[in-house]
Length: 123
Ligand code: SF4
Ligand code: SF4
Image 1 (spheres, protein in one colour):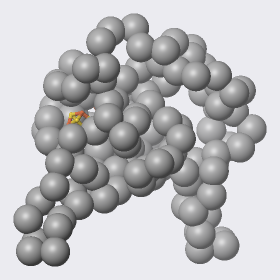
Image 2 (cartoon, rainbow, N blue to C red; image 1 turned 90 degrees about the vertical axis):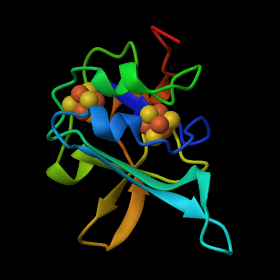
Image 3 (tube, protein in one colour; image 1 turned 45 degrees about the vertical axis):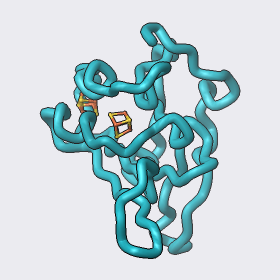
């Protein structure tokens, strides 16, 4: 399972550039003068397009990696909405989903791996 840590991320964009499936997008936080900070405002992965190739993890320069494949082997998605994950600072590794019916972000439910802390295979 591809997971992400918004606290480790420095918003460099290497993962987005490395991704062949164009499933990563993000926005950088700006200061009062409009200068980009090394922090994300939001970050998104669309698992519906991801081929789990790992190129984003390879490209990520942080130690430990801010985006990485955990040791979870299976992930079940109950809806297309659940495949699109959003993160902001302070969010859980697995992010949130946008519930289009309720027009609100909410945590992912019903996935076993949510109970575990994702381990890094590589740092
Ligand atoms: S695992 Fe591959 S396809 Fe999926 S987000 Fe990373 S680079 Fe893109
Ligand atoms: S996840 Fe890694 S590669 Fe992607 S923007 Fe953050 S620090 Fe850069």
